[in-house]
Every structure is written in C-alpha cells, then in structure tokens.
Amino acid sequence: MLKIAICCGGGFSSSALAAHLEKEVSNLHLEDQVQFIFIPIVHLLDRENEVDIAMVCPHCEWKVRQDAKKYTIPVAVIPPRLYGLMPVRDFVEDAQDLMALWKNGTPNVVTFADEPRPLAVKRTVSHRRWLRHETADFKALGK
Image (cartoon, rainbow, N blue to C red):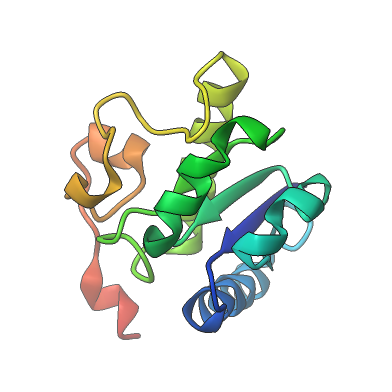
C-alpha cells in the first residue's frame, strides 16, 4: 500500500484535501492500494516513518527546502495549479513517479526535471499523463 502524506502549515486546506482524496479512494474501492494522511509540516520529520512520500502544499515550499536534507522519504511540493484539482489517480501517479526519481538519486525536494519550480507548472493532470498530451476533464469534476 502506498501511503501519501498531505502536509501544510495550519492544516485547513490540506486536511480538507486529504479528506477529499480519502473519500475518492473509498468511492473507487482503492483502500488496499493507497492511503492519504494529513500531517502538519511541523510534524513531518517526526512522523515520516508513517508514510512513503510527503506531498506538501505550495505555501510550505520554503520549509521543506530548508529541511530537505533531513528527510528520509521523498518530499515534493504540490504545484499550485494542481492543488485541489487533480483526481486521486493523478496524485497517485505523481507520487509513484516522484518516488521512483528519489530512489534513483534525485535529492529532496523532488521535482520532475522539466518542472524545477512548482509555481511554473502549467499542467492539470499527472506528469505522466501530461507527457502523453492528455488534459483534465473538468466537466467530470462537477458530477
């Protein structure tokens, strides 16, 4: 099972995002494959053994860059353009791909080579889908 931490400072938006993603996991019957856990960024170093990867809210990028060498798991910043928009499938795909990069020697904070700065990311789907020129179906979000 893949365990993904969603982290931010105060927890208002990230705890809501983690709850939304967990609900989508349940709706898709993926409970045995993936779990999203909210962890405040100030507790990530103490709780990183609970998860496989941490995906951090954009406004906490400074904190994870400051502590990057201390983490023993891959840590990535969720690009602002994707925050709250990506379906669970896309979050999982990005987490898997970022973990693979980290395991192959990419240092924290892990980014895709063509996306070194989260603020500059323009895609609305997982990185692997973006490379295949897929786009998000925003009509499906309203259903």
